[in-house]
Length: 196
Image (cartoon, rainbow, N blue to C red; front, side, top):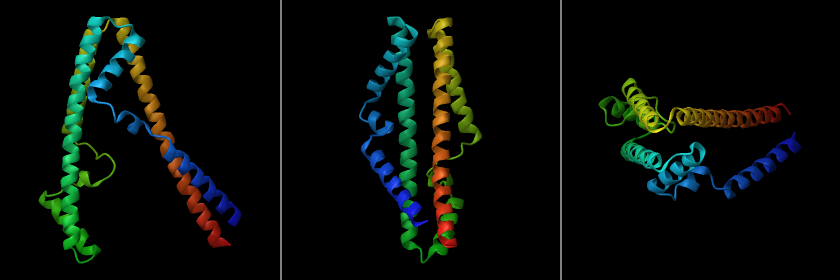
């Protein structure tokens, strides 16, 4: 059992070292401005869909507006979370113990000082209004793209977009399964050590 545990430690250390040396996708694109991202996305689309200069200009304008909206939304969320973090830090310093902290946080949520969704690390569950707004924006974007592209180009665009969505879902599922597998390995090793 000790051999298996030591092998797992070596494997985890190697994996984490390899991951640390390779920049992730978020870091690779973070040094680009929104305009640069728009330009690259439009050029890739032009190559795949054989867009004309006029189409490229219209798609570029559409992507620029979409990028600005996304940046504004991200800024709003970051501002809300920063406010929540400072409020939680304030509550923590004033609290006597863990039970008092929990009680004060629940009171702050009830009073509206803190939003419950902004305390979570994961994306908060969207309410009806935000989901409806997001779907309206997607429909608007889709209709604008349909007006810009020819029917053949639009069908190819939809296939490309669906393929990207499938790849993203597969990647999320794969990452979730890997995390679960690591947790299972860790718990089973701990149980094996307790048995021996």
